[in-house]
Amino acid sequence: MKEKAWMQKTDELGVSLYGHITEVLATILTQKPADGLDALEAVSAQVKGTYFKPGVPAPPPGTIADAPGSTTWQAGSTALLKAPGKDEEVEEADAEMKIPDLMDDMKAFAWAGVGLSAAESYRVYVSLDKLQRSKKLQSVRFFGKVLGTGADYYVAEATYMEPPEEEEPEEGAPAPPVPLEAAGVGCNACVYFVTNDPSLEWTVLPNVTPAQVSASVLIRKYMTGSLTADVRAYPPFPGKEKEYLRAQIARIVHATTLCPKDKYILEGDVAEDGSYRDTTVGPADTEAEGYVALTGSAMADPSNWCAYYAGILAIGRTTNMPVEEEEGDEEEAKPAKPAPEPEAKPLTPITPSEWSVQMVSQMGGADVVVARSFRWPGAYSASVLKEDKMANLYIGYGHEYLKEPFAPQVPAPIMQEPDDLEEQKDEPLSEENAKFKAAELAKFEEEIPDEEEAEE
Image (cartoon, rainbow, N blue to C red; front, side, top):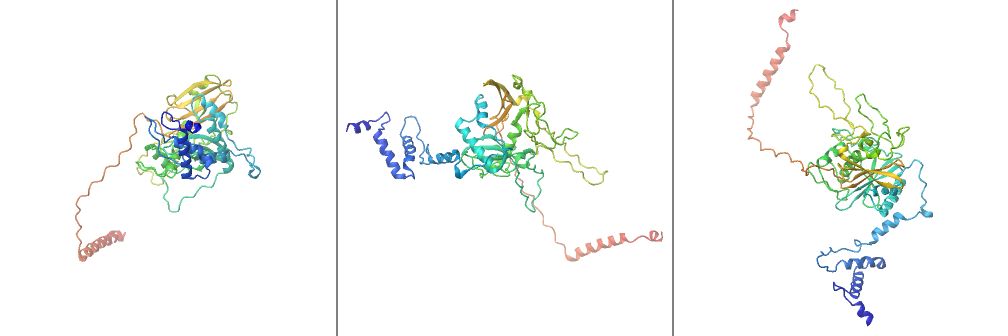
């Protein structure tokens, strides 16, 4: 009886060990989970959360599946981290496949106080490796996380070894006013996969259209974590949340992906006016010969950083539409067309006012310089100078910084009621025929030549 009395001693909240065990057993017997032993700790934590604590609001009621230590997350992580067995032989990665060392990249970002934990980084790395093998990707890197209200998006940036066939537009569909950039070019230079958890399947996002990019600039919505969610905003957005997410990723990538100055060269058709018609910049085949990595405090100077991709124009593309020659009389006066927006070529130096560049610390004798974007909060670029290594990361809500509070566009004014219309008088058939006959006679007389003209 002494042991029972000891178990019935209460704490400052009036809860005893005996009473807690009784409630845990009663909960398990009521809910009857599939594995009671695995659910024991989760149920115990759930029951503890229901105890009254002065000054602390009570948590909402939950279920065993939602409780910490739920078997759902455990099962997914176990499958993700499971070592391949004899019946799950994994083919050796092709020599052309490239995947950055995410664990090493996170060490560089850790000096700036950003990034993922070691456990989360490893789960993402393993998930990216499996994604690359399953989708036969030539390269894949961790773009970052886009935070949402219901769930976050893990985003992977990749390129295919053999790009899939593009879907043909529907027959009879009107052509868009601004043509779509083909896969591998401009805003669609890379393909993006997203998932809410590294242990879940990755979903490929569709190619972004200029209309979606232009529309995303006019609205400001938090992500919900559901790709099929509606984007309720004004002006209306042409697509669901997956298209809105893809448009925001394109804007972030082209504005915040950096590289050292003079490390890469452009390969493509550069016009006489300096416009660049192919925005694809490869990380290997376009590296400048004889490039010497900067050391010391040189990378702390913003002038030694460049934007890796071309900038996005107001029309939603990285390049202006080709000018088509119009056929017609040259003497006819034609309305003047607005001048095209100047294109921002790849490898353009960054704007110092939009970035904070700082040498944060030493990492094994190698200088680490981190650039932080003011324009897109959450975007970082880290350069490990000794290893000539560069990494880019984004963790944020997918919104651009605004100097003033966001104000949505005002809807167009409501049209006024039309004026009272007078009904047209219906002429009798005889009067209508008379007018028609007179018009035909006048036309006939004009066609008959005069006598003088006939003699000539």
